[in-house]
Length: 85
Image (cartoon, rainbow, N blue to C red; front, side, top):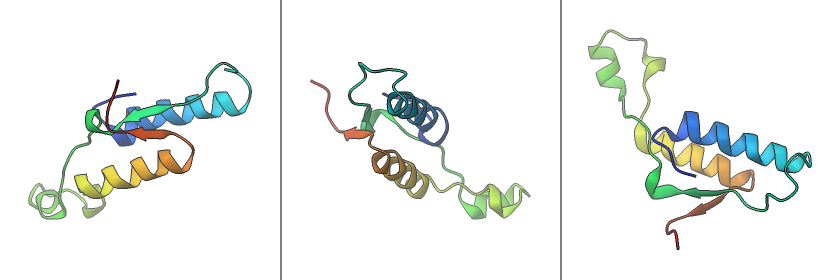
């Protein structure tokens, strides 16, 4: 699985597929692979949000959120991979 927004599209698809597998809706589905190098998210640091006069909760630090959502998918049994063969 690849996608440009790890914390929206990729995680939604991964968790949907994992749930379908867990509920025997997709019995032939064995693994969900997430290709880390092909997933990313946007970067909006707090100071930039403040400069744009946005609420600080809009801040979205790329490295932190990327790590959190990859960890979340892995903790739900998605397989994080760094190569495709």
